[in-house]
Length: 87
Image 1 (cartoon, rainbow, N blue to C red):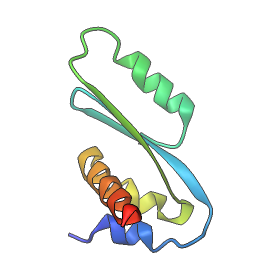
Image 2: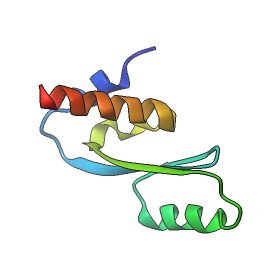
Image 3: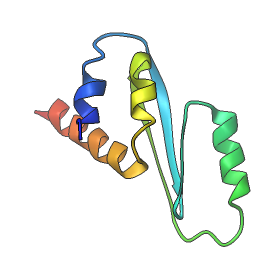
Image 4: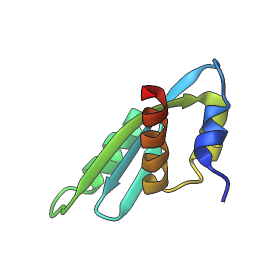
């Protein structure tokens, strides 16, 4: 499996967009559209056991590749990016 962190990292100083990653119970949403995000939240009203969310600014030209990965994989890559920036 190619590491999406390396793929996304290689974007350089290009235009970045905010990728919203949301997981409600076992249902995932990865989007850049706040309306889609709200619609997803509203559709899961009721007996919710878990909610996880993070936002990640990525180069616009890497969005399609990032959408191929799961919520959990993207979160790991985001954490890895944060660790590398701290070094």
